[in-house]
Amino acid sequence: MESAAPFWTMRLADGWRAEQRGDHVAVLNANPGTLLRLTAFHPATTGLTARQWVEMAASVHPPKGRPLVEVRCGDFSGYRTEFGSLGGSDPPGDDDRWLRGWMLECDGLPLDVTYTCPLSAAGRDDADVRAMLETLRLVRSPASTLE
Image 1 (cartoon, helix red, strand yellow):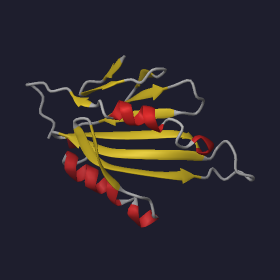
Image 2 (cartoon, helix red, strand yellow):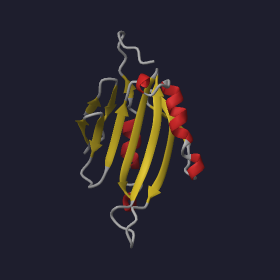
Image 3 (cartoon, rainbow, N blue to C red):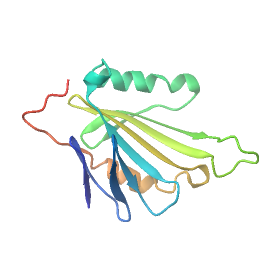
Image 4 (tube, rainbow, N blue to C red):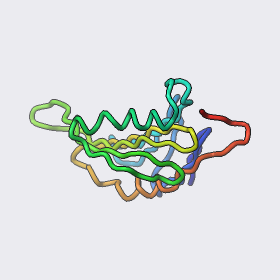
């Protein structure tokens, strides 16, 4: 099965489904609290080129001690970070989250990708998420200019 948005496509892993939700596509599986969110936007709305947006978005993570790794996801390239976020409950509980974020671009299209799940389930969906992101393709239209 494949998910498609106006500017990109991605093959879904078995057991996952995609839903268009306003400004983004939500990719979900049967596990509660799990979400892979993909948001593309026109770079003119940021006042930056897609590459400038990727660099700016990535720059906030190292000062916070978060890892930043260069990545390629299908046609897209950029950076990935990951970290745990404690929700503040005592003792730690269901509001503690694992977040992995990708700041990507391809031919002038910025793509913000975020995977979240309960902190206790970190790593559970890594193989599926990696496999799906490897199939990300830019939909090229002769009439579209993104920069």
